[in-house]
Image (cartoon, rainbow, N blue to C red; front, top):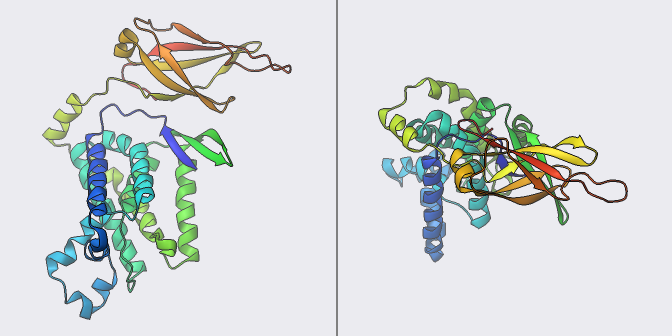
Length: 324
């Protein structure tokens, strides 16, 4: 299952989430330039449990060199797909958690999630010589927080079946619950790191996020976070929106599309998904549209038994604070 977006729009731009993604991409490009030295970098800056369990090996490193991997491992990746998968999940779930925590608390939460996840990995793979790298443990903490904070959210999910991708809107608790069950399954049938994946690190990060997110919310926001929240208010609704059409008459259906006042004034382009069509459609919002105005999409309604389609009528709603 591949998540495309969630149905909860954050009210502020996720500056920290975007910065973390940018740093991970920069570090990956730096990795590509290391050539034959890359394995040594993974051994030095990745988390290698035997460095801590074997006194003969740990004695070869300074205290600082032993401390650095707890932070550096989560910014290294083993390949492009490894990086892409991690950053995509952070992109989907990170903005909402940052929105609730604010930039300062989100930074602390993300880093501590990564540290908690790698500590679980150390305990469950105490004598492993394989370097563990990747942001997935920290991101699992973000997903655990999302699971608790947004139980009513839904995740627009693509399930590829051969060459025909199908789109479904799944409850967030189902999507994330399924994800964590998969981690438990693979962790239980392996030694915790089958196929180079640190399954227990994922589980540890997720549980840390579940267990501590309320504590982080109870911490006071810093003045910097409050000022940033005011300056980073969003001016647009999601570009990709999921329409839930209802039958209006015969084959015609009716749905709702959300825009901000700025988008209604100057126009916008949105991509919508239509459940019964299992497809996406680009919708152009003309300038100077009013609240409750309708846009007609010819042939996008239900189909009759002889294949004749009805129309889909989209009602424009000007959203000011809540885009969910």
